[in-house]
Amino acid sequence: MNSNCGSTTSCETDLMVFSSQIFLFYFLPLTLAVYYGLPRRGRHLALTLLSYGFYGWANPLFVVMLLTSTLISYVCGLKIAGERLIAGSALSGNPELDGVSLHRKKVWLSVSVVTSLSMLGFFKYFNFAVDNYDFLIHGLGLSGLKLETVLRVTLPLGISFYTFQLLSYTIDVYRGQAKSLRNFIDFACYISLFTQLVAGPIIRFREIADQMTNRTHTVEKFSRGVAFVSLGLAKKVLLANPCGKIADVVFDAGSRGVLDAWYGLTAYAFQIYFDFSAYSDMAIGLGLMLGFVFPKNFDSPYLSQSITEFWRRWHISLSTWLRDYLYVPLGGNRKGVWRTYFNLAVVMLLGGLWHGASWTFVIWGGIHGGMLVLERVHGKNAFYRRMPRPCRVAMTFFIVLMAWVFFRAADLPSALAYLGSLFGLTTVQDGAGLLGGILYQPYYWGTFSLAALIVWGCPQTWDWTRTIPQWKVVPIALALLISIVVLMTQSYNPFIYFIF
Image 1 (spheres, one colour):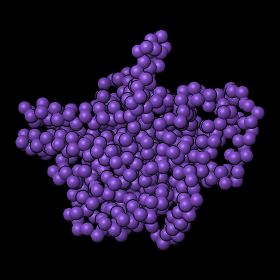
Image 2 (cartoon, rainbow, N blue to C red):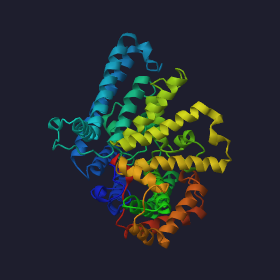
Image 3 (tube, rainbow, N blue to C red):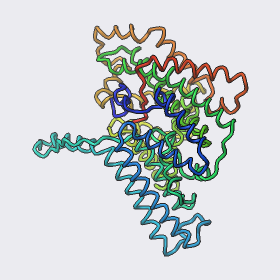
């Protein structure tokens, strides 16, 4: 399996995931009791310390790196804002008006960007770079020059997510789209807040800047937060985990039939959607319970009628971040059609590499980038745009499934072998028929069918919880109760996006 560790629970055993007994029965009650038991002035400090404890549960050294990154971006933000205030252009939002100080602003912004990206690049891609160097050297017959280093870098949890938040802060301050936070505790709380620290959503600073200094706490917010957490936990425990088990059995099998291959791949599509959207639901709900309002992160993505629409609905916080901080600065669609195609391809390739240090992730991003370019080239004349709506949805889902093969497979040969299984191009060994004894049990088949029904026939948690009349309380409470009971009996409980 790739670095997302989606096929095992070994990489999650030391993590305090939301769907764990220690989080639900100990950490969360303690956090709420401390938060609401303190005066407003002490709440951010308490949240910061508790979040560091949450983050350091797996490895206390991770906290050192997080604190270092936070300090650097905090200082850079102050320097950028201080220059802006001196120049008297705080309200203009246009750094070009700063004249002489513009150079110094760019220097501090560069320090922040280079430092954050360097730390991300080293910890996330060092092993990948060494492996590819050794592979190239071996291929050239120069094995004596191979590094074969015993040094292997451990990837800090959630570094991809909080690095993007750090970057959004200094960039937003530089652009004049947000004011810097003078209070370090407030800034540390924004970066380290456990609700979205290790797996998103990616909360851009300007989306939450006002809430860091002034937010309300209401019964309505708290109630909706509980609903988000309850439904998110149900999606994770009752749907994502069983679908993940199906996917693991099929992907890890030495041989599989065509039907089993499609079953396993679709189950993985359901797993990653319910796993990640469940985490986002729980993160949004926990934020509401603490008075924060985070943006929507999923909007029924498998109902998309094109890949362009898919990226408006899937992992919205990432797609909008890439658009505003990468695609637009590259020129967006302002420099001609060919530059637009180039920008789309580059953004998606980098988006794939952001997900993991593997060529399979790059290929996944390349597939999506290539489809975005094709849809931009043909516009409304794209071949599947002329199909009936159900066919457009099915075609888009088919393309997404093909890309998921590379996202899920352990390596490129495994991905190609799986594609062969999907289309009957590989030899099926005699023992492959035994998979059916596991895959088509009523529990797994029923869960798979329920997941499909919810994917294509039910509203999003965000929309369904806008109002919570009394009749909704019963299903929400039942979902929470059943999830907790099942959780206490499950040994398989991975969170795919934790390792990103």
